[in-house]
Length: 240
Image (cartoon, rainbow, N blue to C red; front, side, top):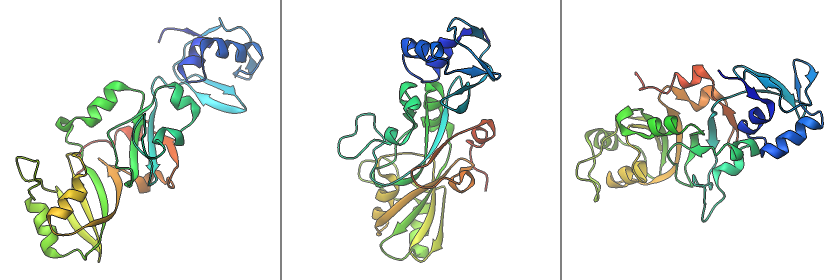
């Protein structure tokens, strides 16, 4: 990769404006390889570059890929209207990098939400042509019956859809809980499908995207982490 000056590297990583990054460098706040760098014009190959700032070690990331365990009552919007936005749960560096949610979860839906500053990644993961399944754990008001499971697998008709929508997988996991796997991401889809099948969704959690599971990431509600290459490799169609 082409070498970049240190101020450009810091700006690209979300540490503020070029002017602010230059002031950090001039104040001796940056160490690379244990050495304080005070000249912002010093160039580095950013690939794999690690640097110390604010008593933390940072690694250069051309793009960031993030998993958030979304709590309830947060909106997946850059301009939230009734609840705080999910971006407020991330670091300031993520805001400077223009990180955005990959698709949306309803404000009262919890669980795995992907976020990134990579437009191509966001588009690919949001595209229905990718057929990446999303796995949901639905808590229902009424008990989950064999008939309910059969209906969701066979397909239910929603009033604004031309064809019935069906779950790829649906299985009962508790008296009032079922796991539902969908490829689509239509508006309130799980809730509307359960309603069309004669039940009511009392709570909803997304527990996996492709083969990437919330359990594997070990995130508590409100926590987030960077996704590494081995995580991104799991964002593929699930094989049961």
